[in-house]
Image (cartoon, rainbow, N blue to C red; front, side, top):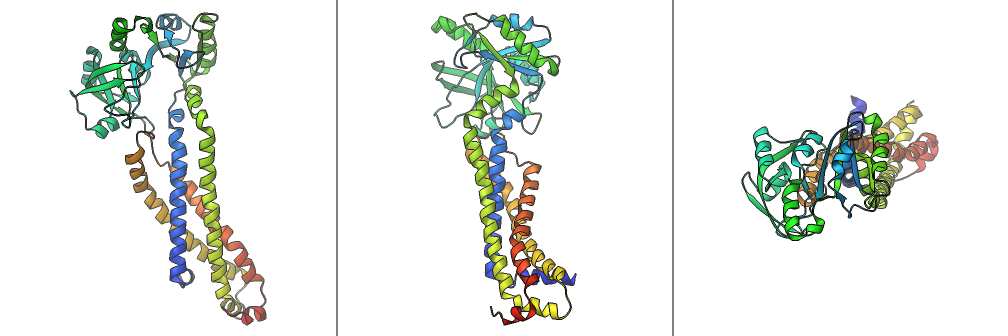
Length: 385
C-alpha cells in the first residue's frame, strides 16, 4: 500500500507535465481505437458473410447484367438449395448526400437466404403482397424519420425516373455486424416499368444469390455453375460471398493499410513523449534514488518505482482514452453513418488499446530505469535538477 501511494505521489509530483502527458496518451489511445474501428467497419461486410452463400455475376463486370432465365439453370445444380436475384438500384432520396444502399430483389427468396435480416411476420406479409412495397433497416428509418406506411420517392440513376415506394416493413439485424441501413424493394416492380420504358433492359438481374446445402462444397458448386454458361453471351463468375465482398474492399486496400500504419505511428509518437516525461522525471530525482541505495534498497526496487510511475501515468491516459472512445464512436456514426453502417467497437480493439498502453509504459521506462539503477551513488548525488 505504501509503495502504491509512493508511485502516485511520484507520478503527480510535477502536475502540469503529468497532466499534459496523460492528455497526450488519452488522445493517442482514442485515435488508435477509432482508427482500428474504422478498419473493422470497412471489413464488416466481409465478416458478416456466410459460408453457405455464393454470388454469381457477369464475368466481365458487375455493371453488366445476366438473363433472369439463368435462375432455373443455377437452381438445377446439385447442392444448391435456393437461388435469389436482384439489382443494385442506386436510387437517390431527395439529394445525393442522402446516400444509402438500395436494392431491387426477389423478396421471398432474398429474405430466406438472409435470415439475419429480421422482419416481423405481419410486416413481411405486407411487404410480399405489395409490389410497390419496401423494407428498410432500423437505422435508415431513424435517420430519415420514416415510419410504416410512408411513401418514399427515389430518383433513379441507373434506372431513370421517379420511383415511389411504400414502407411496409422494418428489419433489424440478428447479429451485431448486420447492416441495418439498407433499403429493399421488389425486383418485379422494377422489371415491369423497364418492360414499358426500356424493354431491352427487362428480364435482367445484376446478381444471383445462391444458398448451398454444404459450405464445404461451395467451391465445387461455383465451378459447376460457371461451366453451365461457359462460351455463352453472358458468362458468369461465381464466388463465395466473402470473396465477393473482398473484391470491393480490395479496391481500397492501400487506404486501409495506410490507416493501420497511422494507428501504429500514433502509438510510437506517444511512446516518445512518454519516454521524454520519464527521462525528465528520473533525472530530477536521481539524488533521491542515490539515497535509496545508501539505505540498502536494491536496483530492483528502484526499477520497480520507475516502471510503476510510468504505468500509473500510462494507465490513467489509457483509461480515459477508452472511456472517450465510445461517445466519440457515437459522434462518428451520427456524422458518417451512411458510409460506415456497422461501426462497433470490438472487445479486441479495447484489448489492443491496453496492450499498446502497456508497451508504451514499459518501453518508455527502460532507459531511464537503466540509468537510475546503474549510476553510482556519488555520481547521482553530484547531479542537480
